[in-house]
Amino acid sequence: MSEKVLMKGAEAIAESAIRAGCMAFFGYPITPQNETPEYFSRRMPQVGRVFLQAESEVAAINMVYGAACTGTRVITTSSSPGISLMQEGFSYIANSNVPCVVVNVMRGGPGLGDIAPAQADYNQATKGGGHGDYHSIVIAPHTVQEAADLMFKAFGLADKYRIMVVMLMDGLMGQMMEPVEFREWVDVKNNKIPVWATAGQGKRARRNIITSLEILAEGLEKMDIALQEKYTEIKSSEVCCEEYMMDDAEYAITAFGTVARISKTVVDLARERGIKAGLIRPVTVWPFPEMVFKKRAEQVRFFFDVEMNEGQMLLDVRLSVNGKKPVYYYGRLGGIVPSAEEMLDELEKLVGGKK
Amino acid sequence: MKTLYKVPGAVTDCPTTYCPGCPHGVAHRIIGELLDEMQLTRKTVIVWPVGCSVFGYYFIDTDAVEAAHGRACAMATGIKRTHPESFVITYQGDGDLASIGIAETIHAAARGERICVIYVNNGNYGMTGGQMAPTTLLGQVTTTSPYGREAHANGFPLKVPEMLAVIDGPVYIARASLDSPKHIIQAKKFIKKAFKVQVNDLGFSLVELISSCPTNWKMTPEESLERIRKQVLPVFPIGELKVDEGVA
Image (cartoon, rainbow over all chains, first blue to last red):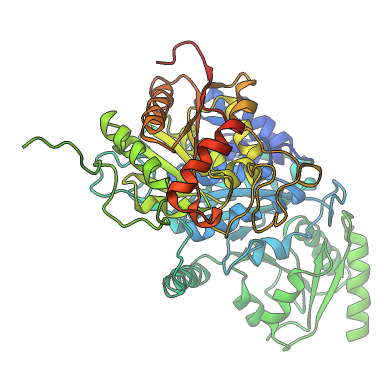
């Protein structure tokens, strides 16, 4: 580990990606994440790597797709409207089994919406988003340090499963300055082109073809089943969830990203008032930590889901709890970040009603 | 015994999926011969399009990727930028390149990406059943211009090489035709120049190949080649449109 530096989230993820061995960035400007490509544009030439500003998000994701087909560690970053434009590419990347990392600094929507922090792309990210039966691994950091750490994990998972890994953030995390400690650089001097990749046949015995096309339904079904088997493996091995003050909790708040960060304060405030609250914070929102909720449903009186959307993770929470305990929801829309006080008020109302 | 004619090493023995009389096979053969002659096969990645040549990777024996509709130049950019040592070709039809993929094409050209674009123009969407394309001639009947393409409603045929020739990024831009042996020999010369542009790291090159579509034009192969000569080439004249210094 290196020493701590004070950095904006938007820049810390870029620096961390570079240290994690990211060799290329392709992207298109969009608020509120411009500091990330700007940082890449300064740093990538310094370390002899690729930075390219594409003509659109559509082009950017297809440049990522091309680079991913060569087995190169590659990233793009964008925000909600730009991520919508990339969905076609995501779907192709999924059925081509190639690795890449995508950061979505979510903003208020739908449509052009606003540029304030939001979490309204949860469904789009965790359920696929593009056409076809597919998933990406979706991780949701709640601090700048965690985002920097998870960037290493994101590239590792992408390579391990040859899959797209999405980092779900929001403008608040991007703008926040925090001390960050970066991990050791990944050595890229001896990078090799993977055996499955398409960068020219070279000395390989057989050529490689990467395609998401299989015109025969029987063949495509086999490809689809293979994808599902990969997802099953990921679900069994890669679920990541933080539990905060849950050991003796009677009430479980659940939230991801920025709201989870605020929720920790809410838990502390609630406990000062004698309410035994805890927090379940999914770090991977896909695969979703279903078992954690299933287990805690035996313990808590209810779950309290808080999001900056109309209750998108709420559905996953309800499926996991499976009717065993009530699941309540509170949220703000349009780019409003709920305060700890208003969340605490809501929690107290619920606890008051349930005592 | 001396061999006068054989299948190029870079062309596979897989039967093609093209209609009888379709010139895609001729275009594939030219590419295969040049990959052999220039010893590029093992360095090459071909980005195949959506359209009739969607299965092109079965027919040309190189590393290959299959792009989304229109995105070949963007995908090629991703490959070439991360692996400058590779030789990257996109092979695209007129619906793919001139309609849905025109932005990716223009910007790859403007950036001077070190890629070669082979652009096969048969004036309609062949794979989907012969719909109107940006390149469809005025008056031409297609399944979505049943009364003939009419300028007031549908605009005019798009001439991609002429557009690209006026921007600074491309190094070599040409249009050839696959209607006759003479023109096919010329097409090979043009494509060879385009390939050399990338080999010599000069920049972006594109060769348009005027092609036919007997099935959707509802003509015999002979009639469709005659139509190219009489109707298409007057609108899409063949020749070199941009030849920068250093192109050989």
